[in-house]
Length: 448
Image (cartoon, rainbow, N blue to C red; front, side):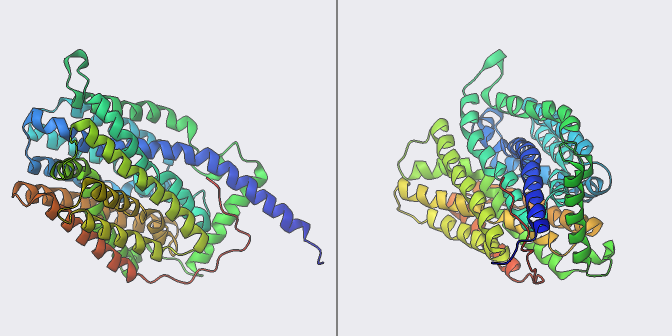
């Protein structure tokens, strides 16, 4: 039996220690931030069940208001990613949280479409740069092989925030404390945590491994060395200029893939409660607001499972593209099945749950793809560019669905539109060409 090099054993133990510490110190906080972020951008879909009637807003008004969030968001996409790369993640995230929390709470006091539009635009402007900043921040802490699983630990906050937000919003919708309507309390209660946590972020979140006091000197040196070796290997002996990012075919394919998929994904998030209410009604089920939000929350719970399974499986196999495509096509298939006429509600609900699983399945592996060939500022700009297209999708999908519904075509036509966009996204991902990456056999997966 050959002798085992004690240095390899020692390195393996050091790797396990570092990855364990980073996972437990970084991921729970980012997970919480993303839960709050996504709930504050999406809770308008829950509040809409009562807000629409109280303020007499049309479906088109809601569609435009939802879209304006993404117009505001686009303005600070690239600057936000670069600030995380070259300045300070904790300071930038603190600014984002405090401002978006106050703007989200101000949604409780809108009375006219113009006020609604303004608040949604300012909310997007306030939150801009958070998600691309987090993607860049992950590249400062997690080696590439671990990144999808780590990302899934944070992105699970998307469906979980919606799954938890639905029943919480159902309770708040029935309150009339201090003379305020229930939909107003949805915005006030769900926006306040962002302000409180934003104030604490500078004291909780280190910018880089070298700033982490909870790592030993040896652990900091090992992690910085691993990440630097990846950066050097990715450049392949040459330096990628920022202007070259905009000439890369893969960057534009990924941008178009995210544009198409997010058109469907954001419609799914913002209109699901409305669609469930209509589908329950036409299939003979109970469709009061509380029941609708509970059904909606269950669909999002399947989305939680989708994020977990895709992150684990794509890290284990190293296959990012295939997992993206499976998620996109699965969402398209089951959304199509859920609008087939003359089905009982329980069958429709099964299709919706499976659609929820696949609608959240694709994005953890997707966001590893841009980081596989780029480094430093080039990666930051590529990620921000791709995400900018993803947010442009939010500005397209919701107004289109609002117009479809106001024109009398109904939820079946809207879900058919969503299924087509998921399919187009899968086609774009399939066309992406990535270099063959040989995994490091000493890399030990993080256990978030």
